[in-house]
Image 1 (tube, rainbow, N blue to C red):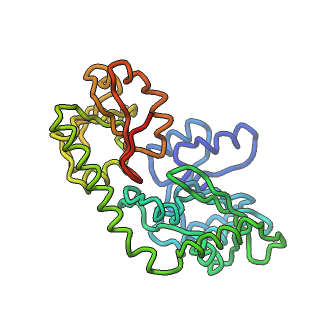
Image 2 (tube, rainbow, N blue to C red):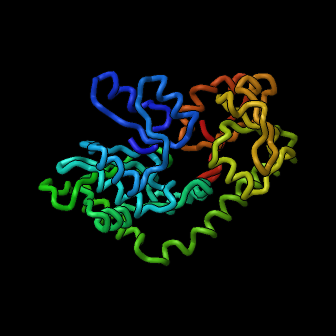
Length: 306
């Protein structure tokens, strides 16, 4: 697995006695994986790494990459590395946010520095082909506001392409994803989301209502800084991750508290910043209704949830 993180996926292969290798450059997560007996190569993946693995006699029947493809600075080198280390008859599977959903639903808050690419099936198919690979199947997933999981093989593989490939390529074409015009209105739609969010916060402040947020997520930080929101409009954000608690959001300087702060301070409104998991947050924090608190999201448009 490329970008194997803390070994959450590969531990299952270890338990099943399936030989595996995690490739993960971050020491803290690699340490966690190794505690689960997951073998880890601590470096970034690319063609050079792949050729060294092959020279050591290591090829892969299956290569997984979950939410790493959009983070790669040299996507062509990364993809060529997949082709180099993949066994004949093997499968590559990658998952990444779908550009079509980002544009269609004004998901500008998923645009942040760790993303080098915003990918469509059209683009990935071409990148694969240039590296000697072919997409033969694709799934649409709800994660991250709408993602794709592609399945790839070598160009000379005998597997036929599933109907899903032509279908989604057709949807992207019908949407206009290959035409620059579709991107022209994205800024205006992002500005509209920002203006609607700010109007809501100012209205609540004028009415003497209190507003907090849940989820110190990267997408939430993008929204808050784009809108220029500060603690005078949104007093605090709660997050269940201990590593984030008792710190401040970058730029906005909004304090991050534990989820218990919601019941302690009883805000009138709770903005769910990771809107893609709004249903999960509402279930976990359903107790805000005890004091009349309500949930709201800002993306893709301002919406009061019930």
